[in-house]
Structures are given as structure tokens and as C-alpha cells.
Length: 604
Image (cartoon, rainbow, N blue to C red; front, top):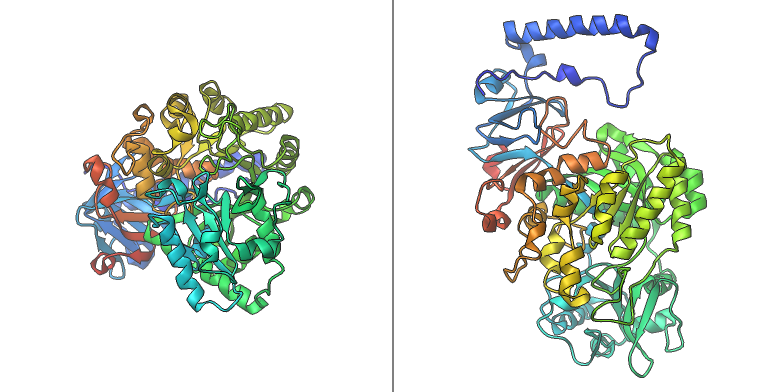
């Protein structure tokens, strides 16, 4: 390490997307560049940098640096100038770049690594979750009823009460009475007879509402199931309060009729949700967030905040909730790559084929073991999905499609294959399948063959592992569920995320889930699908960067890349496996600036 050179930022000054000069000028230009490069090397070797212009703005010393750069995998220290990494090397090498105004951080042996990239989450959902009832920690249905009762006490009469995060498979006991393990709305009516209550399932693929909400939406025993959804009813034919998949739209339509916030109040709430989501992400070491996805109106809000310098984290936004005509008309004008100094990128769309396994909405090749009458739900007809995907291809937009069930994954791969075949001139498309949770083994090699990225969430193996066999049966669960190892061995690119607010945005738990696949009960869920720590780290850094066409600017601690860096309290690459969840983010640096410090001393 003592002889390792310091790599100058000058090698990387040309932006990735800068137009190249005409071919006729290349020979002369290349000779000039070689001369300049030689002079730079001579200056760096013969004379140490002098004056503030060549000094680093920030250095991290005495670290255990894991770079995720195969050319230089480890180091002791990192130097930053502006928003870029300028050098990675030994303490002695990096100290040569320290000047009077350089900020020095002593890592004290801690793990220094590229900041996490959240590969799949719902940014505004994360912000909103901070302003409504948090149901994720409820151990029983009675706990949730008590939370609602407390909210009613302070809510105006008739005011809407919202919450998110319940999951019937995580309760200590099933409520009585119940349908499919979910209670009847009368249990909520007793504590909230007049205030409509909407409680969203942890997966986001179902909601439970009370009688006041059903009346507001006009849902009765005569209400038919909408396409791609279900109004769940009891044995007498009355709605239970459970609205599955697209049936949730009945409530959204009703909510639209309620008094709306003023434009000023709506803007204030939007800004608050953005800030809350960003603060949470930064505290967990996330500096780039793949948002899956947002409408054009929400993207307008992101762009305005980016212009003001008030986006807390870098955003890679997938366009969603728009009609085909709107996509065709507006995709080009919304295309942004590295907008506002790398804070906002829009170059993909988000589609959704099926629901979630927990709500019996995942589209399966064979019926559910615990619901033999169903193979799940198709939320978008395949011809309509293919039409949207072709519009995206026309505008050179990436397509990222939610597919959880094995039937959904196969159908999406089939559509992708047809579109790729019909567009042979289009290369390096990097289309993705979001979640890719249950895949028939015959379809696993197709990810590599087609160049499709599996955008997965390791934390789901922890939370879903205890009940997946109930839905699929032991043999089918083992054969199809979360096949990380199989996909990687087949040569596919696998990325990691949390699907926040379905799960906490904490990447360390998702990293742990992909490595250990150990549930909270201590049982290893399909151990043959575990991955190595190195593979798990790449999934959360350079692979996520690749999945967003950003591997040249982030995802590793390489000179010239953005200075998005974190310091962890424990080395998740070497500590005993069961200690990984106890690691915390001590420091988060975005673009060379400290944005979060868990311990005050770490920021000095």
C-alpha cells in the first residue's frame, strides 16, 4: 500500500454525458491530452500540491476503507475536493493533501465505504409514514385498535385517520372473528364510529377500513370487484373492511371528495415529507434513492426543490401513475440526467403487473396453498403493459416493472424479450424487474440472457420467511423464493433495497437479510440462496449505480466519483454474522459534505 499512487481528480474532469468532439479533431486532441496528463503526473510526483487550490477540502484518515473498486479494493484514507473523491490511499499519501483549511475526520479504525444506494423504495411514502399512525410494531390487532382510539380523541369529528404497516401474519394471534386472518370492520367502528379510518397493509397492496370509510366510498354488499382488485366479504356477503389491490382505489376516489388542503398547505406538507424522508435516509447511510415511482406533478416538486438546493438526497425517479398518452407526450421533456449537480435523474418508468404475496395478490403459476381458489391478481392487462413498455422504448426510457409471483415474472420477461427482439439497435437498456421475489427455476437464466436486472430486497427474507411456506407450500417456497444465489450464479445483476415504507429504509438489515436469510425467529430461510458479504455490498453500491446508469459517477470510492461516503460503527464485512444488525451509521457524507453524524466527535 505504501507505493500506491494517489489518483488525481484531473483524470475525471470531463462529465460522463458531455458530447464528444468531432472525429477529425481527435488525434490532435488526444496528443494534447497526453501532454497535459504527463504534466499533471510530474507535478504530483515531483512536488506535493501547494496552495489551497490543490489541497483537499476534506480527508478521512485511519479508516478501514472498503472501496468496492476491484482495481484498489482497500485503503486507509480518502481525500475529497469539492464534491468529488480525489484520492484513495495510505494515511501518509492522503496527509500530503492536507492544508490549513482541510477538514480532517479520524475514522479511528472504523469501516469507511461508499454510501448506500437505496435500490427500490417509495420516497414520498417514507415521508408520509412519518405523519400518520405507524402500525409496524403492533403485536396484535387490539394494539392497532388502541392506536386508532387515541387518534380519534384528538381528531376533529369526521376527520380522516390514516395509518400504515399492519401485517396479519406478524400478529401474535388472529383476531376474532376474522376472514383470511383479517378482522371485521366492526372492531374499528366501536372506537371510531364517525371518523373514517384507512389503514394500509405493510405491503401497500391492501387496506383495511372502518364502516364510516365504507359509507364514504359507497361500498356495500352490492359493490362489484374492480378489475385487478377485490372487496373482501364475509360469509353473509357484507364487506369486511379489507380492500385488496385496485379495490383501494374506491377509497382514494372517496378521499378526493373530502376538503382539500390549500395550495400553500399542500406545498408545506410536500416539503415536510421530503425533508423527513431525507433525514431518515441520511441517518441510515443512504445518499441516493431509487424512487419507484412518482407522477409528473411530484417530479415537478422534486425539480423545484433541486433548483433551490433543498433535495436532501440524490433521486433516481421512475415515472408512474401516468397514462400512455401522457407518457408519449411528456417523457422527453422530463428526461433529466444528473440535474442540479447530480441531485435528480429521470430516465425510467415504473409499471406494475401483480400485487404482493402477503395479500394474496402475487400472480402465480399455480394456486395459493392457503387459498386454492386463487392464483393472485393481474393489476394491468399484459397487452396494456406491453404498450406502455414500447412507449418507453421509443423514448429511450428504462422500464422497471413490479413482478412478485412466478407467473408475473415469466410474463414480464416474455414482454421484455419481444420488445428487445423488435428493437435490435437498442443496446444496454438495463430494464429491470422490481422485487423478482418468486421465480420458476427455468426463468432464472433468462435474466442474464436478456440483460434484465433483478431489483430485489434482502430484508424481505427476514420478514416474509416465516409465512411464505404458508402461502406456497414448503417445496414451492424452496424452489422459487428469493433466488439470490441462483440469479448471481447465472450471471444476472442483482441489486438491493428495502421497499420502504414496506420495511425500514435501513440498508444494514437488508444487507444482513441477503447474507444470512435468518428470520427473527432464528430460522434460516432457504439457506442455499445466501450470498457472500462482498456480493451483498456490491448489490447495495456499484450494482445499484449500474442499475441507474450511474456506475461511472458513484457506487465505489474511486477518484473522480462523487464523494458519497459513510462511516459505520462496526465492520459489517468481518464481524460475526449475527452482529451485523447492531452496526450503525456514524457518519454520512454527500457530495463532500457531512449530512449526518450520529456521534458528535465523528464530525470533527
